[in-house]
Image (spheres, helix red, strand yellow):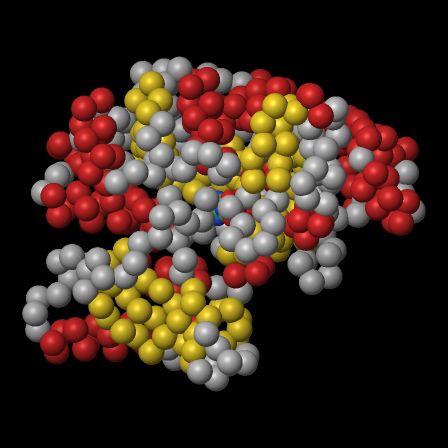
Length: 430
Ligand code: ADP
Ligand code: ZN
Protein backbone atom coordinates (compact mmCIF):
# COMPACT_ATOMS: atom_id res chain seq x y z
CA UNK A 1 0.00 0.00 0.00
CA UNK A 2 0.95 3.58 -0.65
CA UNK A 3 1.49 6.29 1.93
CA UNK A 4 3.82 9.22 1.47
CA UNK A 5 5.70 7.48 -1.32
CA UNK A 6 7.06 10.66 -2.87
CA UNK A 7 8.73 11.81 0.34
CA UNK A 8 9.97 8.29 0.98
CA UNK A 9 11.83 7.93 -2.30
CA UNK A 10 13.13 11.49 -2.81
CA UNK A 11 16.48 11.45 -4.57
CA UNK A 12 19.25 12.15 -2.04
CA UNK A 13 20.26 15.55 -3.47
CA UNK A 14 16.64 16.72 -3.26
CA UNK A 15 16.22 15.28 0.22
CA UNK A 16 19.38 17.03 1.34
CA UNK A 17 18.29 20.33 -0.17
CA UNK A 18 15.01 20.03 1.69
CA UNK A 19 16.88 19.23 4.90
CA UNK A 20 19.11 22.27 4.54
CA UNK A 21 16.14 24.59 4.11
CA UNK A 22 14.45 23.20 7.21
CA UNK A 23 17.67 23.26 9.20
CA UNK A 24 18.27 26.92 8.40
CA UNK A 25 14.71 27.78 9.28
CA UNK A 26 14.89 25.85 12.57
CA UNK A 27 18.15 27.50 13.57
CA UNK A 28 16.76 30.96 12.79
CA UNK A 29 13.62 30.25 14.80
CA UNK A 30 15.34 28.98 17.92
CA UNK A 31 17.87 31.83 17.84
CA UNK A 32 14.95 34.25 17.78
CA UNK A 33 12.61 32.53 20.19
CA UNK A 34 14.57 30.39 22.64
CA UNK A 35 16.97 32.28 24.96
CA UNK A 36 18.71 28.98 25.82
CA UNK A 37 19.79 28.52 22.20
CA UNK A 38 20.52 32.21 21.66
CA UNK A 39 23.01 32.02 24.48
CA UNK A 40 24.47 28.67 23.38
CA UNK A 41 24.97 29.92 19.82
CA UNK A 42 26.68 33.05 21.16
CA UNK A 43 29.00 30.92 23.30
CA UNK A 44 29.85 28.77 20.29
CA UNK A 45 30.37 31.88 18.16
CA UNK A 46 27.87 30.74 15.53
CA UNK A 47 25.06 32.71 13.87
CA UNK A 48 22.10 31.35 11.91
CA UNK A 49 23.53 32.78 8.68
CA UNK A 50 26.68 30.64 9.15
CA UNK A 51 24.64 27.53 8.31
CA UNK A 52 25.23 27.32 4.56
CA UNK A 53 25.48 23.57 4.11
CA UNK A 54 24.37 20.47 6.01
CA UNK A 55 27.96 19.97 7.20
CA UNK A 56 27.73 23.31 8.97
CA UNK A 57 25.47 21.62 11.51
CA UNK A 58 28.73 20.64 13.20
CA UNK A 59 29.30 24.26 14.12
CA UNK A 60 26.18 24.19 16.30
CA UNK A 61 26.32 23.18 19.96
CA UNK A 62 24.88 19.89 21.21
CA UNK A 63 21.76 19.66 23.35
CA UNK A 64 21.84 16.99 26.06
CA UNK A 65 19.34 15.26 28.31
CA UNK A 66 20.93 17.18 31.19
CA UNK A 67 20.09 20.44 29.38
CA UNK A 68 16.47 19.33 29.09
CA UNK A 69 16.30 18.54 32.77
CA UNK A 70 18.05 21.75 33.79
CA UNK A 71 15.65 23.86 31.79
CA UNK A 72 12.57 21.91 32.93
CA UNK A 73 9.67 22.53 32.60
CA UNK A 74 9.38 24.75 29.52
CA UNK A 75 12.65 26.56 28.82
CA UNK A 76 12.98 25.17 25.28
CA UNK A 77 9.53 26.02 24.01
CA UNK A 78 9.58 28.07 20.81
CA UNK A 79 5.86 28.90 20.51
CA UNK A 80 3.40 30.98 22.52
CA UNK A 81 1.96 29.09 25.49
CA UNK A 82 -1.48 28.81 23.88
CA UNK A 83 -0.01 27.17 20.76
CA UNK A 84 1.18 24.08 22.64
CA UNK A 85 -1.54 21.43 22.78
CA UNK A 86 0.12 18.35 24.24
CA UNK A 87 2.76 17.47 26.83
CA UNK A 88 4.69 14.21 27.03
CA UNK A 89 7.57 13.32 29.31
CA UNK A 90 10.29 10.70 29.09
CA UNK A 91 9.91 7.73 31.37
CA UNK A 92 12.97 8.86 33.41
CA UNK A 93 12.95 7.10 36.73
CA UNK A 94 15.05 9.49 38.81
CA UNK A 95 14.77 13.23 39.28
CA UNK A 96 12.82 15.50 36.96
CA UNK A 97 11.64 13.98 33.69
CA UNK A 98 12.30 15.57 30.30
CA UNK A 99 9.23 17.49 29.22
CA UNK A 100 8.37 17.73 25.53
CA UNK A 101 5.70 20.06 24.10
CA UNK A 102 3.73 19.53 20.90
CA UNK A 103 1.84 22.03 18.75
CA UNK A 104 -1.12 20.96 16.65
CA UNK A 105 1.19 20.64 13.67
CA UNK A 106 3.68 18.57 15.68
CA UNK A 107 0.89 16.15 16.60
CA UNK A 108 -0.16 15.94 12.97
CA UNK A 109 3.41 15.36 11.79
CA UNK A 110 4.10 12.68 14.38
CA UNK A 111 0.89 10.87 13.43
CA UNK A 112 1.87 11.10 9.74
CA UNK A 113 5.32 9.63 10.38
CA UNK A 114 3.81 6.90 12.49
CA UNK A 115 1.26 6.09 9.78
CA UNK A 116 4.01 6.10 7.15
CA UNK A 117 6.01 3.67 9.30
CA UNK A 118 3.11 1.26 9.82
CA UNK A 119 2.04 1.27 6.18
CA UNK A 120 5.64 0.54 5.19
CA UNK A 121 5.29 -2.86 6.90
CA UNK A 122 1.98 -3.63 5.23
CA UNK A 123 -0.55 -2.36 7.78
CA UNK A 124 -3.83 -1.23 6.18
CA UNK A 125 -7.21 0.10 7.26
CA UNK A 126 -8.37 -3.51 7.58
CA UNK A 127 -6.07 -4.12 10.52
CA UNK A 128 -7.22 -4.37 14.11
CA UNK A 129 -4.47 -2.74 16.09
CA UNK A 130 -4.05 -3.54 19.78
CA UNK A 131 -1.80 -1.01 21.46
CA UNK A 132 -0.36 -2.73 24.51
CA UNK A 133 1.97 0.13 25.47
CA UNK A 134 1.28 2.51 28.32
CA UNK A 135 -0.94 5.47 27.58
CA UNK A 136 -0.48 8.72 29.47
CA UNK A 137 2.73 10.72 29.53
CA UNK A 138 4.66 7.95 27.76
CA UNK A 139 4.57 8.53 23.99
CA UNK A 140 4.29 4.82 23.11
CA UNK A 141 0.57 4.99 23.80
CA UNK A 142 -0.86 8.10 22.18
CA UNK A 143 1.60 8.71 19.34
CA UNK A 144 1.31 5.14 18.06
CA UNK A 145 -2.44 5.33 18.57
CA UNK A 146 -2.78 8.44 16.42
CA UNK A 147 -0.66 6.87 13.68
CA UNK A 148 -2.65 3.64 13.56
CA UNK A 149 -5.89 5.59 13.58
CA UNK A 150 -4.55 7.77 10.76
CA UNK A 151 -4.05 4.60 8.68
CA UNK A 152 -7.65 3.71 9.43
CA UNK A 153 -7.08 0.67 11.62
CA UNK A 154 -9.56 -0.23 14.31
CA UNK A 155 -7.43 0.74 17.31
CA UNK A 156 -7.83 -0.94 20.68
CA UNK A 157 -6.21 1.35 23.26
CA UNK A 158 -5.86 -1.29 25.95
CA UNK A 159 -2.48 -0.19 27.34
CA UNK A 160 -0.47 -2.67 29.43
CA UNK A 161 -3.32 -4.44 31.33
CA UNK A 162 -3.22 -8.09 32.32
CA UNK A 163 -2.34 -10.85 29.86
CA UNK A 164 -5.78 -12.31 30.49
CA UNK A 165 -7.43 -9.14 29.24
CA UNK A 166 -5.07 -8.80 26.27
CA UNK A 167 -5.91 -12.31 25.16
CA UNK A 168 -9.65 -11.77 25.54
CA UNK A 169 -9.53 -8.65 23.36
CA UNK A 170 -7.42 -10.43 20.75
CA UNK A 171 -9.94 -13.23 20.54
CA UNK A 172 -13.08 -11.11 20.68
CA UNK A 173 -12.05 -8.44 18.18
CA UNK A 174 -9.69 -10.37 15.90
CA UNK A 175 -6.52 -8.38 16.59
CA UNK A 176 -4.09 -8.52 13.67
CA UNK A 177 -1.34 -6.16 14.86
CA UNK A 178 0.10 -5.34 18.27
CA UNK A 179 2.43 -2.71 19.62
CA UNK A 180 4.27 -4.26 22.51
CA UNK A 181 7.48 -4.11 24.57
CA UNK A 182 9.83 -6.91 23.47
CA UNK A 183 10.29 -8.09 27.07
CA UNK A 184 6.53 -8.29 27.49
CA UNK A 185 6.07 -10.03 24.13
CA UNK A 186 8.32 -12.84 25.33
CA UNK A 187 6.43 -13.07 28.58
CA UNK A 188 3.08 -12.99 26.80
CA UNK A 189 4.16 -15.84 24.53
CA UNK A 190 4.87 -17.88 27.66
CA UNK A 191 1.44 -17.00 29.00
CA UNK A 192 -0.22 -18.21 25.79
CA UNK A 193 1.72 -21.46 25.90
CA UNK A 194 0.62 -22.02 29.49
CA UNK A 195 -2.97 -21.42 28.50
CA UNK A 196 -2.66 -23.89 25.67
CA UNK A 197 -3.40 -21.13 23.12
CA UNK A 198 -1.66 -21.64 19.80
CA UNK A 199 -1.38 -18.15 18.30
CA UNK A 200 -1.02 -19.58 14.76
CA UNK A 201 -4.36 -21.32 14.83
CA UNK A 202 -6.28 -19.71 17.69
CA UNK A 203 -5.48 -16.04 17.04
CA UNK A 204 -5.41 -13.72 14.03
CA UNK A 205 -2.16 -11.91 14.85
CA UNK A 206 0.08 -11.10 11.90
CA UNK A 207 2.38 -8.30 12.95
CA UNK A 208 4.03 -7.09 16.13
CA UNK A 209 5.77 -3.74 16.48
CA UNK A 210 8.34 -3.84 19.21
CA UNK A 211 10.46 -1.05 20.58
CA UNK A 212 11.04 1.32 23.48
CA UNK A 213 13.80 -0.85 24.88
CA UNK A 214 16.95 -2.39 23.46
CA UNK A 215 16.55 -5.94 22.22
CA UNK A 216 18.48 -8.31 20.03
CA UNK A 217 17.90 -10.07 16.73
CA UNK A 218 17.66 -13.32 18.72
CA UNK A 219 14.81 -11.82 20.74
CA UNK A 220 13.03 -10.79 17.56
CA UNK A 221 13.32 -14.31 16.21
CA UNK A 222 12.01 -15.76 19.44
CA UNK A 223 8.97 -13.51 19.42
CA UNK A 224 8.33 -14.32 15.76
CA UNK A 225 8.47 -18.02 16.43
CA UNK A 226 6.49 -17.97 19.64
CA UNK A 227 3.69 -15.71 18.37
CA UNK A 228 3.74 -16.71 14.71
CA UNK A 229 3.98 -13.07 13.58
CA UNK A 230 6.30 -10.76 11.69
CA UNK A 231 8.12 -8.56 14.18
CA UNK A 232 9.24 -5.07 13.17
CA UNK A 233 11.69 -2.97 15.10
CA UNK A 234 10.33 0.46 16.02
CA UNK A 235 12.68 3.16 17.30
CA UNK A 236 11.83 6.46 18.86
CA UNK A 237 12.31 8.64 21.89
CA UNK A 238 10.13 11.16 23.67
CA UNK A 239 12.51 14.00 22.84
CA UNK A 240 11.86 13.36 19.10
CA UNK A 241 8.03 12.82 19.29
CA UNK A 242 8.18 9.24 20.57
CA UNK A 243 7.76 6.30 18.18
CA UNK A 244 7.92 6.80 14.41
CA UNK A 245 11.46 8.22 14.23
CA UNK A 246 13.00 5.15 12.59
CA UNK A 247 11.22 1.97 11.54
CA UNK A 248 11.91 -1.20 9.64
CA UNK A 249 10.44 -1.71 6.19
CA UNK A 250 9.19 -4.98 4.76
CA UNK A 251 12.79 -6.21 4.43
CA UNK A 252 13.44 -6.03 8.17
CA UNK A 253 17.04 -5.06 7.49
CA UNK A 254 17.71 -1.90 9.46
CA UNK A 255 15.49 1.03 10.42
CA UNK A 256 14.74 3.82 7.94
CA UNK A 257 15.24 7.08 9.81
CA UNK A 258 12.80 9.68 8.50
CA UNK A 259 15.32 12.20 7.27
CA UNK A 260 12.78 14.72 6.00
CA UNK A 261 11.98 15.34 9.69
CA UNK A 262 15.24 14.57 11.47
CA UNK A 263 18.83 15.37 10.59
CA UNK A 264 21.03 12.43 11.45
CA UNK A 265 24.63 12.35 12.72
CA UNK A 266 26.68 9.57 14.26
CA UNK A 267 29.42 10.83 16.53
CA UNK A 268 32.16 9.47 18.69
CA UNK A 269 30.52 9.87 22.11
CA UNK A 270 33.76 10.71 23.87
CA UNK A 271 35.25 13.17 21.38
CA UNK A 272 31.97 14.55 20.04
CA UNK A 273 33.35 14.31 16.48
CA UNK A 274 31.43 12.86 13.50
CA UNK A 275 32.34 9.29 12.54
CA UNK A 276 32.73 7.95 9.00
CA UNK A 277 29.54 6.43 7.59
CA UNK A 278 29.06 2.86 8.77
CA UNK A 279 30.97 3.17 12.03
CA UNK A 280 29.05 2.69 15.27
CA UNK A 281 28.68 5.66 17.56
CA UNK A 282 26.13 7.85 19.31
CA UNK A 283 23.08 8.92 17.37
CA UNK A 284 22.58 12.69 17.33
CA UNK A 285 19.35 14.12 15.94
CA UNK A 286 18.20 17.61 15.00
CA UNK A 287 14.50 18.18 14.51
CA UNK A 288 13.82 19.73 11.12
CA UNK A 289 10.10 20.48 11.34
CA UNK A 290 9.32 20.68 15.03
CA UNK A 291 7.31 23.71 15.89
CA UNK A 292 6.71 23.77 19.65
CA UNK A 293 10.07 22.48 20.79
CA UNK A 294 12.82 22.19 18.18
CA UNK A 295 15.99 20.46 19.37
CA UNK A 296 19.41 21.06 17.93
CA UNK A 297 21.93 18.22 17.80
CA UNK A 298 20.25 16.22 20.53
CA UNK A 299 22.53 13.55 22.03
CA UNK A 300 20.30 10.47 22.19
CA UNK A 301 23.00 8.34 23.91
CA UNK A 302 21.81 5.48 21.71
CA UNK A 303 24.52 3.55 19.92
CA UNK A 304 24.00 2.55 16.31
CA UNK A 305 25.53 2.93 12.85
CA UNK A 306 24.35 3.91 9.39
CA UNK A 307 23.90 1.13 6.83
CA UNK A 308 25.50 2.82 3.81
CA UNK A 309 23.98 0.60 1.09
CA UNK A 310 20.62 1.58 -0.41
CA UNK A 311 17.66 -0.53 0.72
CA UNK A 312 15.96 -2.99 -1.63
CA UNK A 313 12.63 -1.26 -0.96
CA UNK A 314 13.76 1.84 -2.85
CA UNK A 315 13.31 4.26 0.02
CA UNK A 316 16.15 6.74 0.09
CA UNK A 317 16.12 7.55 3.82
CA UNK A 318 19.18 6.09 5.50
CA UNK A 319 18.83 2.93 7.51
CA UNK A 320 20.20 2.50 11.01
CA UNK A 321 21.37 -0.74 12.49
CA UNK A 322 19.52 -2.03 15.51
CA UNK A 323 20.40 0.03 18.62
CA UNK A 324 23.09 -1.94 20.40
CA UNK A 325 22.73 -0.10 23.70
CA UNK A 326 22.91 3.30 25.31
CA UNK A 327 26.18 4.98 26.15
CA UNK A 328 25.04 4.97 29.78
CA UNK A 329 24.04 1.27 29.69
CA UNK A 330 27.62 0.21 29.33
CA UNK A 331 28.87 -1.73 32.30
CA UNK A 332 32.52 -1.86 33.23
CA UNK A 333 33.27 -5.16 34.89
CA UNK A 334 36.85 -5.93 35.79
CA UNK A 335 37.96 -3.26 33.40
CA UNK A 336 36.00 -4.75 30.49
CA UNK A 337 33.20 -2.87 28.70
CA UNK A 338 30.00 -4.90 28.54
CA UNK A 339 26.57 -4.12 27.12
CA UNK A 340 23.55 -6.00 28.48
CA UNK A 341 22.59 -6.81 24.86
CA UNK A 342 25.64 -9.03 24.55
CA UNK A 343 24.31 -11.16 27.39
CA UNK A 344 20.82 -11.17 25.91
CA UNK A 345 22.07 -12.31 22.51
CA UNK A 346 23.67 -15.41 24.04
CA UNK A 347 20.73 -16.22 26.30
CA UNK A 348 18.06 -15.84 23.64
CA UNK A 349 19.93 -18.10 21.23
CA UNK A 350 19.50 -21.00 23.66
CA UNK A 351 16.08 -22.66 23.41
CA UNK A 352 16.30 -24.07 26.94
CA UNK A 353 16.45 -20.53 28.32
CA UNK A 354 13.28 -18.57 29.13
CA UNK A 355 12.46 -14.94 28.39
CA UNK A 356 13.54 -13.29 31.61
CA UNK A 357 16.98 -12.62 33.04
CA UNK A 358 18.79 -10.16 35.24
CA UNK A 359 22.44 -9.18 35.50
CA UNK A 360 23.62 -8.61 39.05
CA UNK A 361 26.85 -6.83 39.84
CA UNK A 362 27.96 -7.28 43.39
CA UNK A 363 30.81 -7.29 45.84
CA UNK A 364 33.99 -5.84 44.50
CA UNK A 365 33.41 -6.55 40.84
CA UNK A 366 31.50 -9.81 40.53
CA UNK A 367 29.06 -10.46 37.76
CA UNK A 368 26.18 -12.90 38.04
CA UNK A 369 23.42 -13.65 35.58
CA UNK A 370 20.14 -15.04 36.88
CA UNK A 371 18.38 -16.78 34.05
CA UNK A 372 14.88 -18.22 33.87
CA UNK A 373 14.54 -21.64 32.29
CA UNK A 374 12.06 -22.01 29.44
CA UNK A 375 8.74 -23.46 30.60
CA UNK A 376 9.66 -26.76 28.94
CA UNK A 377 13.39 -26.26 29.49
CA UNK A 378 13.95 -28.58 32.46
CA UNK A 379 13.39 -32.29 32.21
CA UNK A 380 13.98 -32.83 35.93
CA UNK A 381 17.52 -34.13 35.40
CA UNK A 382 19.88 -32.12 37.61
CA UNK A 383 22.87 -33.18 35.52
CA UNK A 384 21.34 -31.66 32.38
CA UNK A 385 20.79 -28.49 34.32
CA UNK A 386 24.40 -28.32 35.33
CA UNK A 387 25.54 -28.95 31.76
CA UNK A 388 23.37 -26.10 30.55
CA UNK A 389 24.69 -23.81 33.26
CA UNK A 390 28.27 -24.59 32.34
CA UNK A 391 27.54 -24.09 28.66
CA UNK A 392 26.11 -20.67 29.39
CA UNK A 393 29.11 -19.67 31.48
CA UNK A 394 31.46 -20.66 28.66
CA UNK A 395 29.45 -18.89 25.95
CA UNK A 396 29.16 -15.74 28.02
CA UNK A 397 32.84 -15.79 28.83
CA UNK A 398 33.77 -16.07 25.15
CA UNK A 399 31.49 -13.13 24.31
CA UNK A 400 32.24 -10.87 27.26
CA UNK A 401 35.81 -11.75 28.24
CA UNK A 402 34.57 -11.97 31.83
CA UNK A 403 33.43 -15.18 33.48
CA UNK A 404 30.07 -14.60 35.13
CA UNK A 405 28.31 -16.76 37.66
CA UNK A 406 25.18 -18.22 36.13
CA UNK A 407 22.18 -19.20 38.22
CA UNK A 408 19.28 -20.99 36.54
CA UNK A 409 15.91 -20.33 38.12
CA UNK A 410 12.47 -21.82 37.39
CA UNK A 411 10.31 -20.37 34.60
CA UNK A 412 8.26 -17.40 35.76
CA UNK A 413 10.21 -16.84 38.97
CA UNK A 414 11.89 -13.51 38.16
CA UNK A 415 9.84 -10.35 38.61
CA UNK A 416 8.27 -8.86 35.46
CA UNK A 417 8.43 -5.08 35.25
CA UNK A 418 5.21 -3.18 34.62
CA UNK A 419 6.96 -1.00 32.02
CA UNK A 420 10.39 -1.31 30.43
CA UNK A 421 12.39 -4.28 31.69
CA UNK A 422 15.11 -3.64 34.24
CA UNK A 423 17.98 -5.92 33.28
CA UNK A 424 20.80 -4.74 35.52
CA UNK A 425 21.13 -4.48 39.29
CA UNK A 426 24.39 -2.86 40.30
CA UNK A 427 25.18 -3.30 43.99
CA UNK A 428 28.89 -2.93 43.71
CA UNK A 429 30.82 -1.23 46.46
CA UNK A 430 33.34 0.18 43.98
P1 ADP B 1 13.60 7.02 28.59
O1 ADP B 1 14.87 7.57 28.02
O2 ADP B 1 13.24 7.63 29.90
O3 ADP B 1 13.49 5.53 28.55
P2 ADP B 1 11.74 7.10 26.33
O4 ADP B 1 10.56 6.39 26.81
O5 ADP B 1 11.57 8.29 25.47
O6 ADP B 1 12.54 7.60 27.57
O7 ADP B 1 12.64 6.02 25.62
C1 ADP B 1 13.46 6.29 24.53
C2 ADP B 1 14.64 5.37 24.56
O8 ADP B 1 14.22 4.01 24.48
C3 ADP B 1 15.55 5.55 23.39
O9 ADP B 1 16.44 6.63 23.58
C4 ADP B 1 16.25 4.20 23.35
O10 ADP B 1 17.30 4.13 24.30
C5 ADP B 1 15.17 3.24 23.76
N1 ADP B 1 14.54 2.65 22.57
C6 ADP B 1 13.41 3.04 21.97
N2 ADP B 1 13.13 2.25 20.90
C7 ADP B 1 14.12 1.35 20.81
C8 ADP B 1 14.43 0.27 19.93
N3 ADP B 1 13.64 -0.07 18.91
N4 ADP B 1 15.57 -0.42 20.14
C9 ADP B 1 16.38 -0.09 21.16
N5 ADP B 1 16.15 0.89 22.03
C10 ADP B 1 15.04 1.62 21.88
ZN1 ZN C 1 13.71 -0.45 3.10
